[in-house]
Length: 182
Image (tube, rainbow, N blue to C red):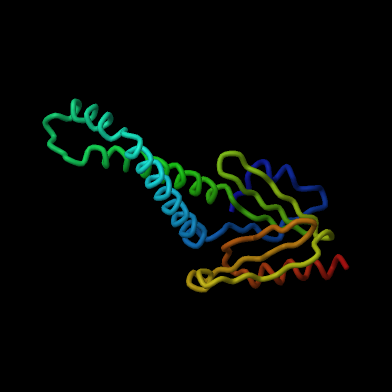
């Protein structure tokens, strides 16, 4: 896997890369797509019903009917609400999550763990190996379906290496690094 320029610049002189990992796409994206559907549906119902209660139905419908005289649709207001308050938010959520997936990766070196994440702006989280207090394997039912797992890292804060294949091997690598430090 090709490392980005900014990660190469973050490495110290005596630091070697042990592993470069990326989350598996389906287990990473499926829960986020379901979340996008949920929020888009909430937005659609909340704003759609509040607009129709506010009397916007007649104004918007008459405006749209004037523009679409010959198309013969009786559901212009619902079409408008669906496009504006469901499809657009869903598409924006989807773009955000796809960008988040594409920019996320994990680098394990002999001195620290670097987690790169973000959707538009990226953020590098660096965890020094000697500052790690505890690591745990996390495996949810969805992880079992996709044959992935996550690792919870506790230092002064919690961070996760999510939805990775060979999670047991990664866990053992981090565990070995912790044993060498102590």
